[in-house]
Length: 126
Image (cartoon, rainbow, N blue to C red; front, side):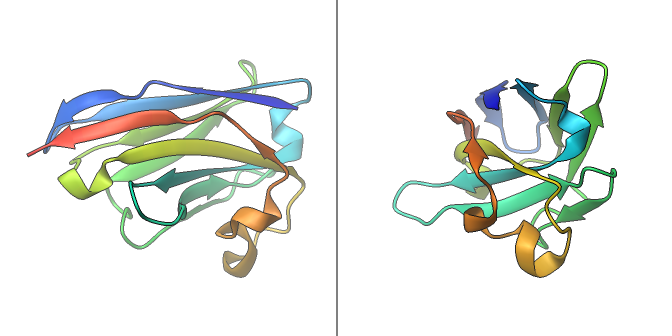
């Protein structure tokens, strides 16, 4: 499984940005796909995930501002980010795991995901 994250860029605070994670090699609907982010000097943290069955889960810090979705026909998972804040600045990574048990205790853990994309940088200016 290969993942290709794209869509990062520079945006002003309050703006919006959409990220894409193109999955190749396998059918995305058989995988849980998560988005994580890592700011300079900080640990990688969970942002959002979508299960193989379509359930979604979000970190508390992004609820109401970020939406994860999936297009099975395009084998792609999206992360729509609105009302962006400077603290959202980070490299965003998408990750996938085959039929991950979709519980809060597992979907937010980096160790639960076997496949990772290369990351895309999001910079939010104040």
